[in-house]
Amino acid sequence: MTGNETVALLRRAKLKATDVRLALLGRLREEHGPFTLEELHQKIGRQSCDLVTMYRTLAVFQEARLVRRCDFGDGPIRYEFFDAHGAHHHHVVCVRCRSVTNLEHCSLDAIELKLRESGFRDLTHSLEFFGMCPACKA
Image 1 (cartoon, helix red, strand yellow):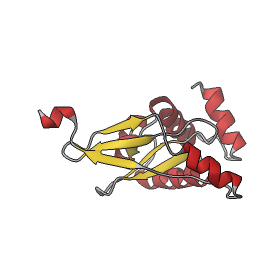
Image 2 (cartoon, one colour):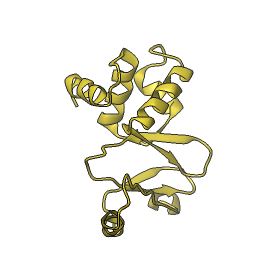
Image 3 (cartoon, rainbow, N blue to C red):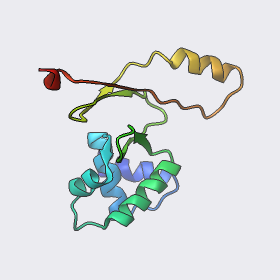
Image 4 (cartoon, one colour):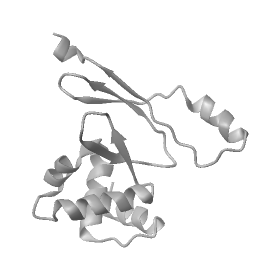
């Protein structure tokens, strides 16, 4: 994603395009995630900003529906880019090495469509799978 597209996303969300917001949203858009706060801090450069600023920025992004918060029940919260107009996905998490694999296909879209037809709005859903990855199993 170009810098101009990142600026456009921020403007559509009615957010000011600060250096930290551009760096963070740009990185999430390029690599998607999900990443912990510390992983994102390393990716955009520790000197760019402190962890508190990043946490607050991610909270603002979540409120603006630019990022999605992922909780896999293992302690750290992860964040990933969220495209409200694009296809969503789910995750499978290895219970041993904690690697995360994106599952691009969602079988729940038909259920969500039925709920929308019955009047529900602003629907979201989350589905995570847990198991042992092939590398850990070997």
